[in-house]
Amino acid sequence: MKDVTTIELTWIEERIERWIRFGKIVENRVVDRRRRIVGFAPDSIFAFVRWASNEYGTIVSRIDILRTVATDEPYSTVPFVQPGGEILLRLAGWSKVERVLRQIDAVEQLDIKPEEAAPEHWRHVHNRLTAGDQPRSYTRPMQAAWILRKRAGA
Image (cartoon, rainbow, N blue to C red; front, side):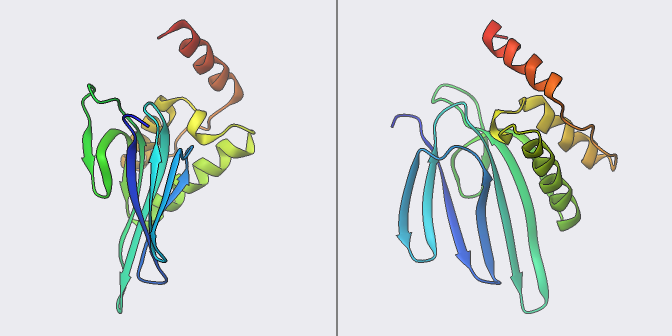
C-alpha cells in the first residue's frame, strides 16, 4: 500500500512496551517474537503508547495520538514512527497517560471508535491536560457535527 505510516512495536515484559491503543491497522508484519511492525493508511488516527523501566522503576511513560499523512503533507517526527505524522496529542508521565487512556475509554463507551472521533477532541484533551485542567467529555452531538464537517469537506 502506498503512503503507509509504519510503527515499530516492541514487547519485552516489564522492560519495554510499545503498543497501539487504537487505530485501524492495514499492515502487520512480525519481525520476531518481541517485535512487529504495523502500518496505517493515510489520514488515519491512532494512539501509540510507550513505556519502559529499569531496575529502579518506570523511566518512560508516554502516549501519542497521531494522524497519518500522505507523502506530500508536512509531518512531525516521532520515535519508532516512519515517516511521522500530525501530532494531535503528545503527553508524558504515567498520571497524564492514564488520564488519556480514561478519555479513550469514555469515547468507546459512547460506541464510537476513538480513531473516528474528531481530531480536535484529541487536541483539546492534549491542551487541557498540559494545562492541568480536566478535558470536556466527547459527546454524540460532537461526533455528529464532525461527521457533517467531514462530508462537507471542511
